[in-house]
Image (tube, rainbow, N blue to C red; front, side, top):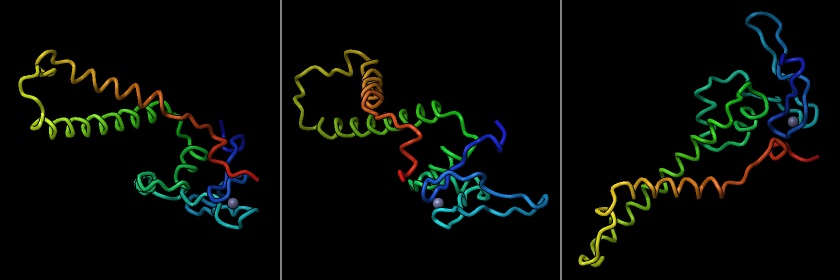
Length: 148
Ligand SMILES: [Zn+2]
């Protein structure tokens, strides 16, 4: 899909814009201004990808709007898989830390489940992953666009 066919959005207010920039020469670009909010439609067009990733980590919604609405990024299923696995790993390590701290007060005469089956620990990770996947709400592009 070429730039002339693709629909772009202002990352500040969500208004549809015809294009994000106008190229005057090989090195000169002029960013377009949104007709609704009178701000630059998408300032991330000229930003380095590292800066965009930092803003994504900082949970700036304008950076998410840029990536999801105005960029050529298409591997959403890979991103969602990666984020879900990271969240599952985080929850898994936290639950292990909690179990290890309570181990000192547990009954030592009871059998240890980790000795019973070495894969039980891995199975717990998969259960946490399935729980996170099932409880994750799926959003669509309309969520990112501000209603008029
Ligand atoms: Zn705007």
